[in-house]
Structures are given as structure tokens and as C-alpha cells.
Image (cartoon, rainbow, N blue to C red; front, side):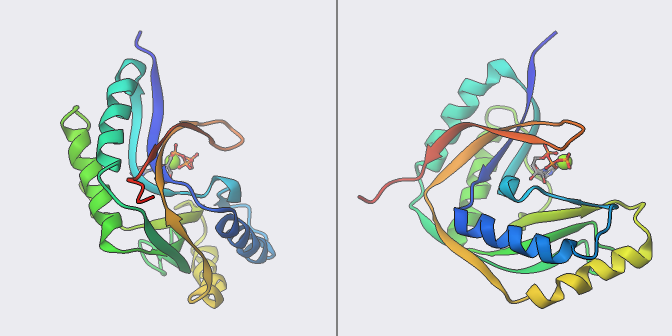
Length: 195
Ligand code: ATP
Ligand code: MG
């Protein structure tokens, strides 16, 4: 049998953003609700592409392709601001923090998507909507609870959680465990340095 790893590509956040997102999770968790699965604040990241189970022998060509693509971009600033829900506030499945970013982020994401297609990784069919997943609500969560979550998050609608210069992209391995996923950075690929 072929060895596979569950992979995804993401932008890691700086300590200030992690800290501020951990703080709002503490606030929102005060009204405790076990139906809601909070993402461990240390694990929060900006997903660019989810690859899923990938044969181990493909990882070196994947890393090489990713390296070439990422190196075509100059560093850019992102601002983490506000909260919202997918698919919408009435049927929240994901509670997220927003990411304000220049067009470069969208170009980076679509170039990665396109480059990976050349090595057989299917393109994303949904439009890229940059966000940081803070919590997941199951569709078994009672409607009453679901509808309260976005309201609780509403005071943070315009809160700035931090900003950072994006200088690299990370290929992560995700190991799912009963106690939550463990993310391991496999390689960090730099954007083009101006210095
Ligand atoms: P869990 O699945 O236990 O809730 P998780 O979603 O954090 O944990 P993974 O499922 O391994 O862990 O996902 C890793 C990252 O890829 C997360 O940011 C997740 O939101 C994203 N992701 C997972 N599946 C998809 C998908 N089908 N499309 C887009 N992004 C995805
Ligand atoms: Mg998942």
C-alpha cells in the first residue's frame, strides 16, 4: 500500500494575531457550549489550499513546484479584522475572523492552484475567500445555539486582531486525532525577498 500524508498549504500567523484570537475565543467561550468545536488558537492559520491525502513520493515535486510559484511573489501585508460566519449568520457552520489583503494574496492562491494542477492536483472549484476558522458548529447543533453564536461574536465585527507581513508559505501535514488535529510544518517556502 502507498503511504499518504494529509496535506494543506497555509500562511502562518504572527504571535500577536494568535494572542488576540486566543483572547476572543476565551470571551466567546464564557457561555460554554460543547457542541462548538473551537480551533486551538495556536493552530489557527490562513488556508490557501487543502490537498488531502497525498502519496508521500509526490511530496518532493510538490514542494519544488510550490517553491517556484511562491518565489514569484513579493511580500505583502494582511490585516486580520472582524468576524463572520459561513455559510451565513442564520445557518453558521464556521465562525471565522476576516482577512483584509491586497490582490497579491488572491494571485498567490490562484497561481498555487494552477501550478499544482500541472502535477495532477485538482483545482479548487469554490472561489477563494480568505478567512481564519475560529470554530466549527456541527449541523446537529441545535438551531437556538447556532443562531446565538454569531450574535456573541458581533461585538468583534470591527475589531482589528493584528496585521503582518506575509513572507512565506508553509506546507503542512495534518494528523487527525480524537483530541484534535496536529499540524506539522513540513517546509516553509519564502516569497521573493526585496533585501
Ligand atoms: P478537523 O477536520 O478535525 O476539524 P481541521 O479541519 O483543522 O480539523 P484538516 O481537516 O486536516 O484539519 O484541515 C486542514 C486545513 O484545511 C483546515 O484549515 C481546514 O479548514 C482546511 N480544509 C479541510 N478540508 C478542506 C476542503 N475540503 N476544502 C478547503 N479547505 C479545507
Ligand atoms: Mg477538517
